[in-house]
Image (tube, rainbow, N blue to C red):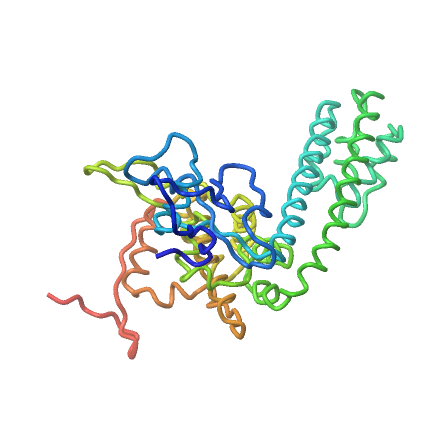
Length: 388
């Protein structure tokens, strides 16, 4: 039985000599760069493509090249899984959000080059100011590019709480090795950063217009700890708002490659629990959201911190992102659903009292203490005598 949307690959009758006629619409084997207009006829909301990894897993003889007839046959039989192709409005939104992320990455790279240029000129400004591109740092950088070399005059450009670091700033802004060539390149770098900022703002304004049909979904995702309005826009642009395409949250997590898999053959374990290559834009948005949630006093933040104590931080990030993507699927599946945080102490409340005590004792033993515990009677407050 052909999958939904595969009516275009049915062949007319009357074929002779065991040969199928040339199809009017050829299925494309998806490789790297893809043309969305070739997948979807005008007005359609979804389409089927043939992922390369699915074709490689098929058994039996197959042609040496990507034969359109063979691809049509295996697609009509349902032998390959369909690729996710969002509707046209989501694809238009996705084009803008992805380019915004590229521009943001380029701006970040340019900022890092500025810091490297300052270090080449023996200016350790980043050791005093955490963000050298803030209000105070940007004023100092512009003054350096304009030719100012007086350390006291540069340090006086500090604003707000930076005023308490004047002496340290004077030491960090020693311009003995900062040449005119450094200043010329710095001015070009600052102009590039301003250009990227202008482009990002223009893209954000355009995205605000394209996201209007999905404002309710953005508000739903914005309630999750760690996810803001921009991150919600990126997530909707990558997975869409129609969760009927993913039957369960596990299907969405598996498609996004945020579920580690253990491959085993003949009793031998292969790989390192890798998740595989998924959507890099969705992965970047989830990674940023999990890192932000890890700094909050919430259920997701407590889960990340709890897991990071006993496993690598990247594994803890994936495990927490798995839970976050499950929450996203649940919210987008129900228009009336609202996110309610379970609280940072949710896990401790559900954990057995003896298990909590054992974990606390082990934590103290790792610090070099020997601990002996004895149970109390909750009614009288007296020590309980151990049985036996």
